[in-house]
Image (cartoon, rainbow, N blue to C red; front, side, top):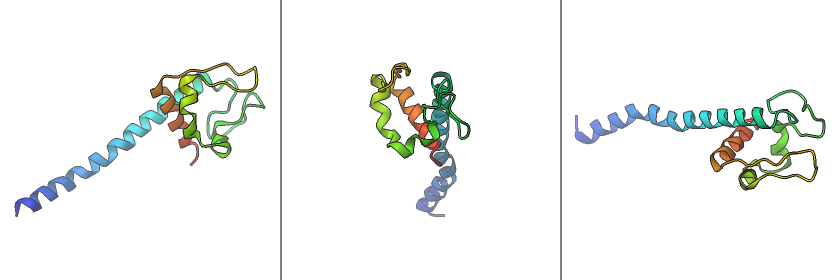
Length: 110
């Protein structure tokens, strides 16, 4: 077997493992975001794929992407998210937490 063919065969053998790394990282990030949502937001919002929000005025997280691009929440989550109604407390997440929460919101779009 020629050296180029050996390298190509070796690279193909490693490919499945390399392709799963981003998915595993994404899964971990989504899980972290789900934990943040359940710990910080579930008191008012439905944070899962089903169910009503405990606070009727609080939109379910699974519907947020229909209102605006959830990717745009990163800065607001990191700087301190505020809303126009007084009942919602201000939340401030570190950049990794904000990214994880956005990943979780995006996972609900499916």
